[in-house]
Image 1 (spheres, helix red, strand yellow):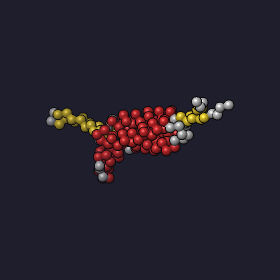
Image 2 (cartoon, helix red, strand yellow):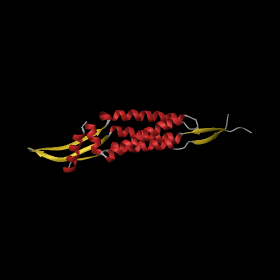
Image 3 (cartoon, helix red, strand yellow):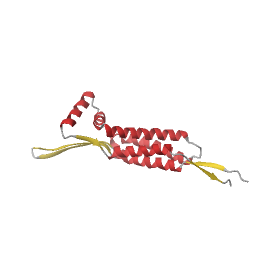
Image 4 (tube, one colour):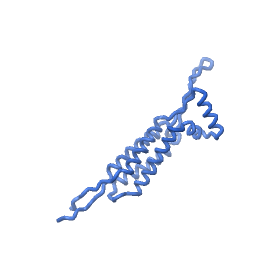
Length: 171
């Protein structure tokens, strides 16, 4: 009777994490926050206040570095046949959890994040909050924040998905 050799594959967790990395990479290229104000007319010239924060030119490169590290871990996770691949899973969980927390912060407190991104001190942040409360100025999350959260969630799910044990007959 032949002895069975067990092999562990991590394809599903790895592919789930790769899908999360793709979502984060696309989200890093898009704005994370948008500020829109009322349309104004000054001396016959129409002006509209539109500002966006995020994207590749505005901090998205750091997000791409984290996404690259997650991609490397996901590929190593898919390539390994070790039982748990615990180091890769922990790093994926850390990166995915951090992306989800950042997205939640963008969704819950966009004015605070916008003020911090502009480099305003506490008093400037309070003034900005008062302006947002009293005027039609709106600061809201942009598509990049939603993709950041989705990608982080997929990476975290990939990190905790169980591996699959398969039998392979020795040759």
